[in-house]
Length: 143
Image (cartoon, rainbow, N blue to C red; front, side, top):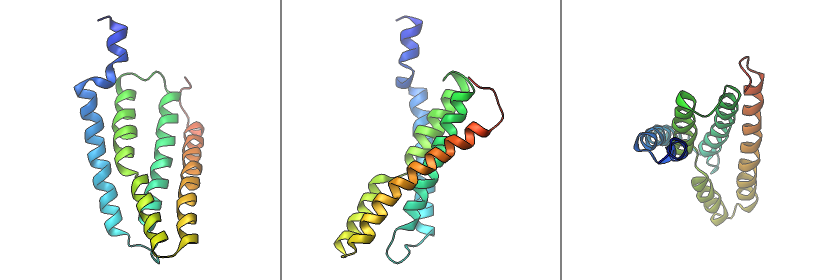
């Protein structure tokens, strides 16, 4: 196997998978802790909304900051995998958002359910854009 072929397969290395798994476990624990600490607001699962929006912001900030500082190698790759794929992937949960929206629909709160689902996705997109903009404003090397 050539050096470039090994580099392309870095995402399959056990050490890289362990970084993602560790970040994912921490992110999932943080989500669960917050979802238990923040009660629903009038039946609206506000914790999941806040978690998904915060996760989208962090992911936008992280990825933009990393790409502006150079190639996806070494420490930058570990941060991307551990925090981006791992932590943010475990922290955010669009499947729980879907369950929350379905529960709202089942309870007859159709408008709230649609607003919650669509609003969550739109707020997440805005938060990711804000994270990218925040990272772009940070001083540092441009790649």
